[in-house]
Amino acid sequence: MTMLPQLALDMRLEPGISFASYFAGANGQVVEAVRALAAGTGEQVVFLYGSPGLGKTHLLQAACREVAERGEPVAYLPLREAVRWSPGVVEGLETMTLVALDDVEAVVASPAWQEALFHLFNRLRAAGHRLLASGAGRPADLGLQLEDLVSRLQWGLVLRLQDHDDAQKAASLHFHAKLRGLELPDETARYLLMHYPRELPTLFRLLDRLDQASLAAQRRLTVPFVRQILQQKE
Figure 1 (cartoon, rainbow, N blue to C red):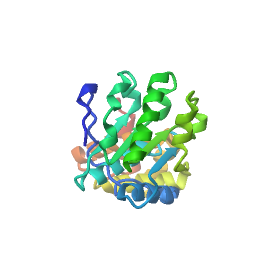
Figure 2 (figure 1 turned 60 degrees about the vertical axis):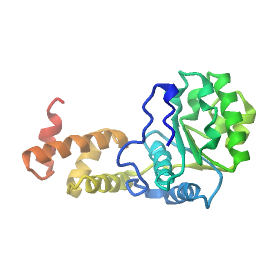
Figure 3 (figure 1 turned 45 degrees about the vertical axis):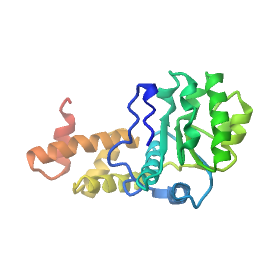
């Protein structure tokens, strides 16, 4: 994977990120489309959008990891960080088998970045390489001034990640607890959903705290134990 050293940023993929560690819920078809892009059997361009916390970054990084593990070059570019730098850093990325652009709305205030991404798209397409991108909404709804870039982002699949209902959030908690080797009783999952913010990133951070506390105390995640731990200040 290209590390884009000129950005002076650490752009390595997060450890443990893969398709296997993603809870799809109602988004199974979206995941399959991203996997097909990564495998080279699907669309050349896929754009993901949806509410925060649904795992857009996870899917972008999982696709990059799958391609990289086959020995092919990839570039993951978190635009909220990269936009602080010259758009010239994207020069040459068309040599990558897959380029993943996270949070495209981050370039709304930068015409130069929009122009650079437009030309990168054209070079990637000419090379037969793939683009996976994400945003808070559809490309046409992000406020991008460069209409040519909007049209390019819509050339392939534009897929929405569906919000999880409470049952899916509980299932996601069980899924991520299992990844950590934890047993999460149903009543404890319900307690977390009833008493804490229901955004998945917040719930996963709580799960990290409970994982550490359970290991240290050698205790099961019963409701009384969870209540005791989470009432303590971090």
